[in-house]
Length: 282
Ligand code: GUN
Image (cartoon, rainbow, N blue to C red; front, side):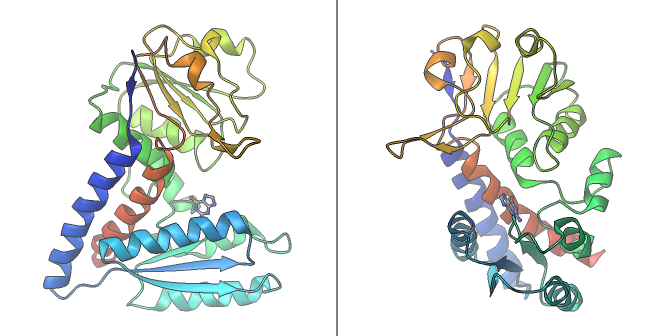
């Protein structure tokens, strides 16, 4: 039977470690502060932002919430970011995505000071990851590395296949697996013979955004399968990009949905907030 990789437990462990760190920092007079900006009131974004605030509260990070109306102009948003960039009492700045259509997301991401870019989306953060320099790493792929390490799964020398090439998950995931000495292949919607490629994987990371797309025909016996997708099915049940019931019997370890990768994203965001203090002190 496959090992079920418990993201809820691992994220709780990380949050508890951070809570202790933050308490120690507080005792020395250092307060960690995250500014969270949401433009408009997309219901899914509101849930994510609410969860981020809750995690801050639990750990002892001060959170500043900026809930801006849908019709906020790009200039107003950029002005707010500039103000937060300049504030010594703000360590991290997070702009919840997606933004309304009249705002250029790349411009907004690029406006956040790289030392406050706790999402790890700024081109400088991505570039630093690429050449092995210090900087913030996108939270979901960073969380997956923690899940693997804390579940005792070795990455060095393993065949790693990532399906998906997004800037937020696929590309940084590939770079992180490479940094951990994996042999990395990135597959995507134009990959020929996808099943042949994914069947090479000792570690298969699936971030395609299609419910239950990956079935057992894509998976080598004994592989570790990491499912980044989350979808609400009719009847409200959640599922991932991986057909869990089909894949679980053939793999050695698998992340469930919910309770796998999802909880790790916020834990790593909190970790980046705590780390931002040391980065800013340099
Ligand atoms: N929207 C969906 N996921 C994320 C995330 O990790 N960060 C931000 N800023 N927005 C998101």
